[in-house]
Amino acid sequence: MEIAKLMYVGALCVLYVILSAGLIGFNSQLIHPDRFPHAMLVTTFHMACTCVSTVILYLVCPNMFPTVGMTEGRRIRLIKWFFPLGVLFAIGLYCSNRAYLYCSASFLQFMKEANIVLVYSMSCGCGLNTWTRAKVVNIIWIIAGASIAVTGEVHVLWTGFVLQAVSQVGECSKNVLGDWLMNRSDLRLDPLTYTLFMAPMCLMVLVVGSFFAWNSSVLPDLAEWWPVLIPNSFLAFSMNLTVALLIKETSAIVYIMAGLVKDILIVLLSAGAFHESVVRQQYIGFMICLSGVFFWSYSKISPDSVPVLMFENVCFTNRESGELQSLLHLPKEATNETAESSPEVKNGV
Image 1: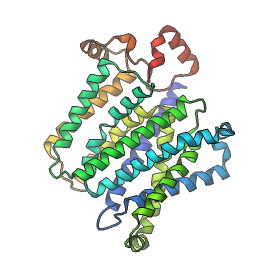
Image 2 (image 1 turned 90 degrees about the horizontal axis):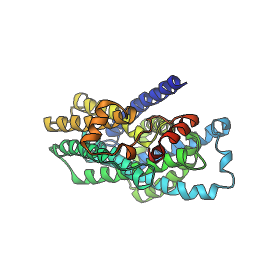
Image 3 (image 1 turned 180 degrees about the vertical axis):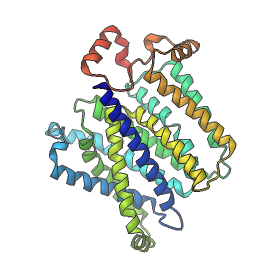
Image 4 (image 1 turned 45 degrees about the vertical axis):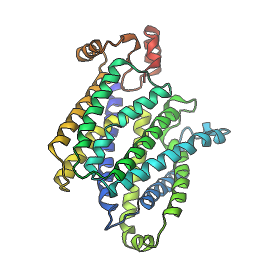
C-alpha cells in the first residue's frame, strides 16, 4: 500500500512539473507587449475555465466530490475561509503573470526558490510547524543561494521584482491555508470540493480587477488571441487541480519541493530554447539554493540518516524539538503509534 502511495505521489509530482513548466512557458510567451499584454484578463480566463469546468464536473459526476455533503450547514463558515483564500490566489496569479512583462522567466524562477522559506515561516506562524536551529540554518543556506542568483541579473526591473515578491506572498499564503482546509481542519475537504469553492471566490476578485484594468486595446487583442487563450486556460485548470491533489496527498511544503525540478527545467529551457541571458553567478547561486532545498527535502524523507543527524548536531538542535514526521501522511494507526513513542511529533509538519 505504501509503494502504491509513493507511486501515486510521484506521478502527481511528474504531472505537476510538466503542466507547471508548460504553463509558465506558455504564459511568458503569451503575456508579451507585442502579443497579449493583459495579465489580468489572462488570469481571469484561467479562473473562469477552472470554475466552469469544476461545476460541470460536479453536475456530471458528483461522486468525485465526496466531502461536499459535509459542507451542508457550514457554507457561511466556508465563505469566511474561501473569500480570503480567493483574494490571495487572485493576487498571486495576477502579479505572477504581470511580472512576465518586466522580467525573464529564468529570473522569476530564481526568486521563486524563496517560496519554501515563506511557506515554512507561515506554517510555523499558524502552528502547523515548529522552528528548529537546523531549519533556520537550512533556510539561510537557501536564501543565500537565491540572493546570489537574483543579484546576478544584469537587466533587473524593480517593478517586476516587486510584482513577483507580492505574488509569492499571495501564493504561499494560499497554499498554507489550502493545506489547513484539506488536511488540518475538521472538514478535510477533498481537492475537487476545495477547487469547487475556491474558484468562484477567486473569479469574483479577478472580474472586479478586469473591470478596472479594461482599456480600448482589449477587444482587438481578444479577437486575435482567443484561439490561444482557450487552450492556455484549460492548461491552467489542469495545473490548479493537480496542485490541489498534490497538497492534499502531501503538504504545501512538498508542493514547493516538487517545483524544484520544474524550476531547473524552466531555467534550462529559458536559456537554451528562448536564449534568455543567464550569467555564471546566477547558475552558481541557483545550484547553492537547490542544494539547500534538496537537503531540506532529504531531512524530511530520512530524518534519522547520518548526514541529517550530523547537521543537527552542528546546529545544536535538540532532536526532541525537531521535525520527525515522514514526508507523506502516515496512516492513522502509524500516526498514533508514533505519537505514543514521541509526543513531540504532534508539533511537526
